[in-house]
Image (spheres, rainbow, N blue to C red):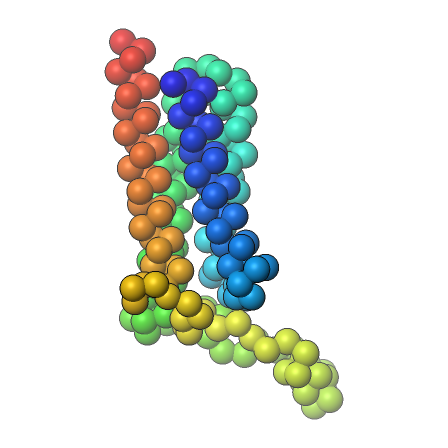
Length: 160
C-alpha cells in the first residue's frame, strides 16, 4: 500500500494527461490556454507519485497523497472555471477569449491572424453527453482528490 497507492495516483495522472494528448495529437483538438494550465497538476502528481512509489516510505507516501489531493482539488477548481467560461458563466482570460496579438504594423497583424488562429477558451470543441472536456476534467480531478484523501486516511489508519 505504501508503494502501490502513490503509483496508482501517478498512473491515473498519466492516463488523464495521455487522454488529453490523444485528443490533441490524434483527435486534432488544439488546446486553449486554460486546457494547458489544467495539465500541470497532473504532471506534478505523476512525478511526485513515482518518486514516492520508489521511496517506499510511509511518511513520504502520506505527504505525497496529501499534496496530490491538494493539486487535484486545485485542478478541479480550474477545470470548473474553464467549464464556466465555456458556458459563459464567467469571463475568461483575454488571451483565451479574444485576440491577444502583438503587431508592429498592419502587415505583421495580418500575418499573425493568418498564421495562428486563436484557440478560444469559451468555445466547446468536443463534448460527450453534453459535457465538455473541461467538465469531464472536473469529474476526474474530484474523483482523484477523493481517492487521494481516502488513501491517505487508510495509510494513517494502517500506521497506528
